[in-house]
Length: 222
Image (cartoon, rainbow, N blue to C red; front, side, top):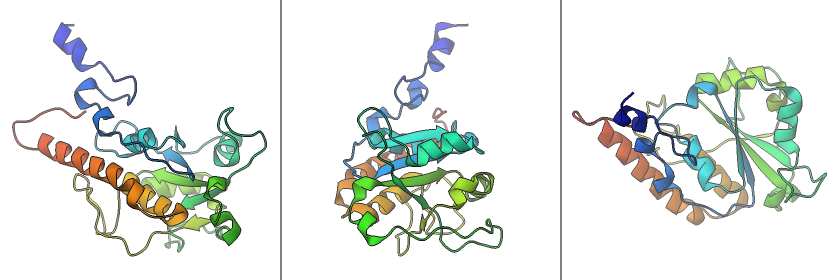
């Protein structure tokens, strides 16, 4: 193997992407009392256009797990259990699934739990937003394959502007990237959207870079 070939395979130890496509230049840390659990479909893990890794690196109070059908005990711990020694033992979180609250004809038949009471919404530090990272079909499979997710209260996003995620095809103009949707949900749960503007601007730069790679004659990005 030549030195050049070996170098192309070197991965950044932080974002886990090839060094030629490192995400770290766009990481924009945001303070957010609501914790975020990102459940990523395995087919998204190696997608160079995905936004979930950038989101995770920019949200200090986030965790990321990859899978389609999770072990129930592990999933229960991810949904409500403490994350690390910094959290008080036994301090359970209230998980909320970021997912449409009106199931389509193919969605699971179980009714989702009621949305958290106002007292919980007044204390965002007690909340844990659960985000499914995958295409609509993949996220639906994750929902079907994990009964614990079906039982969670859900929140849906409404009256949103068009997505800036121009590098991936969407079925509707209001479909957002995982990063954009999570920022919008956190703004609804914990306050104004202004703290997320630097991250959204960094995401726009990432999208522009990816679009540049699609220009004839340019390579890289995976």
